[in-house]
Image 1 (tube, rainbow, N blue to C red):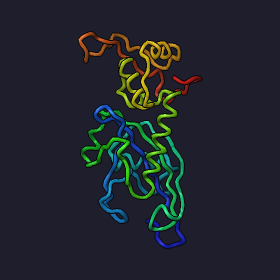
Image 2 (image 1 turned 135 degrees about the vertical axis):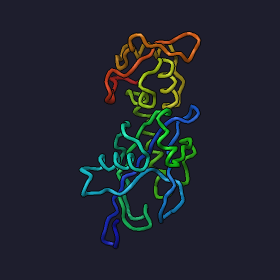
Image 3 (image 1 turned 60 degrees about the horizontal axis):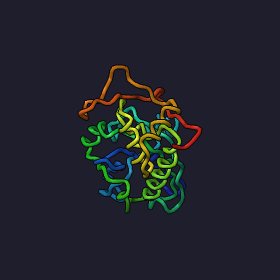
Image 4 (image 1 turned 90 degrees about the horizontal axis):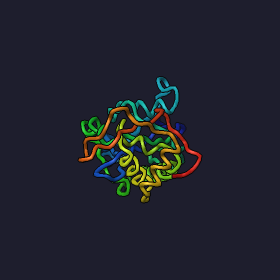
Length: 221
């Protein structure tokens, strides 16, 4: 742990997005030490230079150790730094955002991680309010021209579920017929042969992403 005025505190903080009761939500974990002991904050931790090859490795380690999560969509957001963001001294946090489908939240519950609506994630310690706000901004902006919202869905999904996820992420309503036409033109999902949803009375075909990595489009949805 850094100590002394000459040291810079270097951490990683992750805005972990998921869904709760149909709304975009953020995972928070109560701090177990000062400063702000007992306060909900973003999942984060110190960079360990002896084992972390870069801050992405730090973020993955933190999610694994503190949230019990392995395979997640993870992308760097930006760096937050300065003298006043941490009462212990000058600090920098490389912020990331992660996406976890709602059905994969069991490891978080075992670690008493709170899931709160994104709009209610306020009054957090350090500058975590600003990190959450920037994460929401990135998610909504990039979600309009990429496959990003699909990473909040299970591996297979219906086109209705996909449209509804885009609506939740972007905060808009989308015309179903127009959405389906655009999805067909963009070719970033493919039908799963012989697989249909059993949620509704009328079975709907199941789809999946054509590639596991993020796909950016040449137009907005």
